[in-house]
Length: 511
RNA sequence: CGCGGGGUGGAGCAGUCCGGUAGCUCGCAAGGCUCAUAACCUUGAGGUCCCGGGUUCAAAUCCCGGCCCCGCAACCA
Image (cartoon, rainbow, N blue to C red):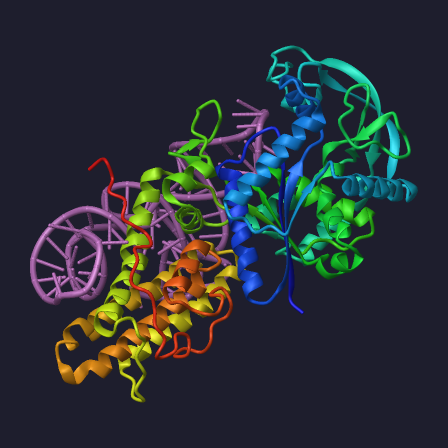
């Protein structure tokens, strides 16, 4: 049976959902919807990462204890994704009791196996940042944040024997070149693995940081962020039972932004090796969004909020823009004027207008009742049908390759063909000839088949619009499900709804 | 020894892995249509695919060299 396990990063709860995290969610949600509709067993995971220095600090700054603070922020993330229509199957929190327990079990197991050891660590510590710095990270020997000289500090900690698995991981990647994709990011990880990666410090003394998962074999320590957070990908499945775990691991498709490539490309696979678990299927790395050509940052005040975009232009339009305007793996630029241009051109003029003109004719000429096909077919009819067959095939190919922009492009070439078909067959002219009524009905029926198919093809990308199409055609079947053969999608004699404008044009203030 | 991404008609971008009519959106020009959200359809103008070498029957695409732009502190995908 086909199955797929889709994960997003766990969001660190010291910020709010923004364009970047929304992009990750929209990509993964689109995939999850796509594979579900194709009958895959699908598990789609997201959640929040809630331990660590910064959370403890943020909680303190807010005058709250960490638990109360993380409860609130985690809930805010969850409700934001709900409001965005994200269809995750499970929302994990690293503070969940089952996760904490699983992390501790895993630590115990790896410790027993000898891959976790205790050692003295000396480093340059900044008290302001509460963290160690490497010499490379320092600016003129000073902490880049506080511009103070760090203190040489010795500390005893637990270390994960990551270096032991370095060569094995390198071999795995070389034997599975698409383990990490796109290729550029695989190359980066290979480059990392060609240098000594060392061992990973996985603990913090409670005297310095108490907001974390306690090390089960030494209660003076808590575990450090990555050995906690990454494990969620497994603990979430385990929580749903061994059967769920067996079903979905290792069919994992991890999705991350390029900033956390190293933890997911190096730490996580070596951790899996130490735990005796098979490696995930793919690590899929996407790029960043700039806003008006500038890096998105709080200080610049150009952070794009997905909820604000939902208000402004609608979820479907926002999704469409992000998926159509970016190439997976590369950086892209968010501009409101491009968003409006895409919206008007693709959604309003091409897609929306197509639906309106067809439904209008159906309503005007036949009172909404779908007419029968005759046996003969014109070349135009065939071209229309072929355009959709092509689109269906292309979408499948491009989705497998995470080429969302091309998948949408191929759907739009079918939209274009549909608009062309109307001009070529000119039902609005034929209708004036009483002897051509049957042909007009047939042409419109073909177009309704096309629109039903569009609804199906678009469902993973534009779920709301697909539902609207389903409602307008008054279909009995869930439009996201695979459609019946061409010609049987909208039965003759069926009555459809009057036209409705799905995407009203946005008249720009300027120009 | 930096690492990575990019340089394609007026603007913004695909295409480059797997060489063979350079594609999309916007803009511009002419025409068509009137079912439609002044939308739709057709045609056209506009390109040294950063530069220089090489491989090849053939290079935006492969190889070598060079130039230019952007990101690589934190928040954060």
